[in-house]
Amino acid sequence: MLFNSSAFIFVFLPIAFFVYFALNSRRWVAAGRFWLVFCSLFFYSYWNPIYLPLILASMAVNYFLGGALKPGKRNDFVLLRPFSAARRKQVILGIGVAFNLSVLGYFKYADFFISNLNHLGADLDLLGIALPLAISFFTFQQIAYLVDSFRGETQEYRFINYALFVTFFPQLIAGPIVHHKEMMPQFASTRLLVINHKNIALGLFIFSLGLFKKVVIADSFAVWADAGFSSAVPLVFVEAWTTSLSYTFQLYFDFSGYTDMAIGAALLFNIRLPINFNSPYKSLDIQDFWRRWHITLGRFLKDYIYIPLGGNRKGKTRTYINLLMTFLLAGLWHGASWMFVLWGALHGMALIIHRFWKRLGLSLPALAAWLVTFNFVNLAWIFFRAPDLATATNVISGMFGLNGFGGVGYEHFTTAQLAWLGTIPDALSGTQLILLTNAIPLFASVLALALIFQRNTIQLARERLTMTRISLASLFFSIAVMVMVNSVSNVFLYFNF
Image 1: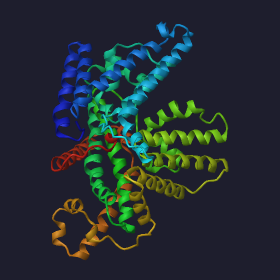
Image 2: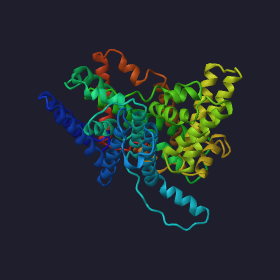
Image 3: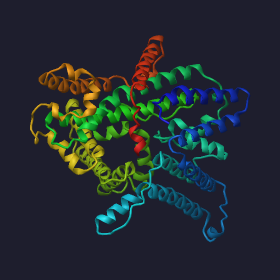
Image 4: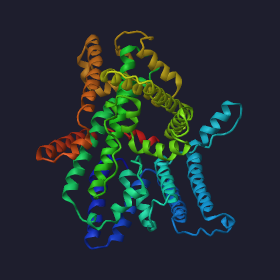
């Protein structure tokens, strides 16, 4: 079920909300939690019920192993009796991490591994495994839970509470990736069991802005991005820059829109999810970008990969290696493709160069620093989006003028782009259409940059909600719903990861 669907907005969310608080009002708190878990599992299985047993089994195993890791547990398993108590916990943690990575590896990377073996000369049949929805997110979340349990940072909760932590529908599909200690104290708080009108107003405000970002902005840029990356002819200068910038803006407004909607929906239930975006395209260096982009993933990479590898504690060379390894794994986490690995390598190398630059004590003026950072991120996203190296090379060659500097021609526009323009092409001559099709993506890019450099959703939400702001949110929501009703709802990009 999509956040940007009528079924979610007008049926699922209201029913989940009113039944939950109706149960709490009768002091049936346990029933309320069961209801939220049921709603979350229904939300998950609505997409494809065949993988519902997978998430249930994953939760059961991780809950059991997490319980065995908690302080005070004897862990008196027969096979572990020869080990000391500390060693037993290390073994259990290793089993848990191996279990999660094995499940993720089988469903997400088995065919990728087989394909690479076939390229080396093997002749193996692909398994044809469909990627289970949200497997990367709930796997990382549960690995973090096991590590936190090993460190003594989680408390004892019942299975229904743990199931709610994993499956809570606003953050289940594409994050934010949350810690057990961030969520469960909120669900355990009795003062959060009653309707909070301030949270409702704030939640609807944030949800509306997120819906507008996704439906009106991101899905519009998708038309231009998809056409450029699927082009069978060399892209000229303007086409190539239109393609790359369209995807850069599409990805940001799509994913930050999803996160806003997740945060807004959770607030209706008095739950505060962590911030996942903080205007990343305002960054003046690549390190700052990763402090602002997909913040909870960056936190996971730092706490559970980079620091355990040694972080910056073992000298400059080892620090550089750790950075590169972390981002190679970050790229692979996003998908079973060497293009994702290449994207991760680019960001790892950029962070290494940034550290070396800082060690030399060098700096750039703010505008130059922003231009370098933004254009690097924009260039790297090409490898993230392109299905293969040839497509990425076509876009990059066009951006550097290697395919010519001619304007956008009518023959280069796909059926989808012309459909997006509606009946306008029929009323224009060839020259007028060329001017229009050049102007539209340029205007859209300028508008997107203008929006990015305004206060972001979280900054707006921290200010007092006046009637003007609520009216503005209602306007955004109404526009988004009208666009949504008259178009096919696009899947959020991070559903693919």
